[in-house]
Image (tube, rainbow, N blue to C red; front, side, top):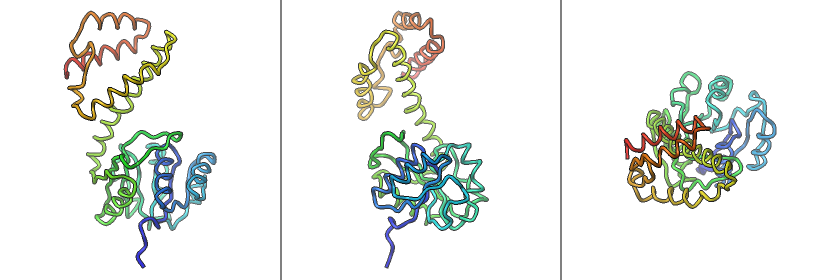
Length: 262
């Protein structure tokens, strides 16, 4: 009898933000997560308990007969551990979840390898719904590419085959759209705190800005003093940031960029 894709035995190397969200999402869909590896017992044990798996903090004790190994580590840790991870586990399919690491990093280490990249911001404390998350896959074989697409399709309605070059461009764009944007929230929160104002007053503005780009081109949605280059307002804001030279520089650079491209 043909086995279902959910019967695939999966090992997670890493128990951070992305690994936690992905492992739990797969578990909830009926996939068989058999083991979690992490350098710390607390993170490995917590995720293992959530998905009813075993765990280890010793890379040499990672099971050798899993069908799929999902590596979700920081880039430097990934490169450091790569040779040891794959050793004695060459029969499995190895994938990483990074936007910034190319497919060919696996060459010379694994025979079957790929990438499984869910493009979303993840935190352990807030589990996300994968149904709307775009998942980008890549592999060194057509069969494994289809296998990864099938797994992704069990989680999301947005599954794409993507080259390493395309994925790295996606990751760069995501840094602008997510990480840099969130840093702007952090700077806004810092400014508000100086005047004992709560950050929550920004939430309706943030939400409406996000809603607009669902139906409008971001350039068309741009408002504020920079897009019309209101010099009087801009100079006043810069003066208010005199005691925050780094924020003042960010304000000036962003205003110039908005005016140039707006």
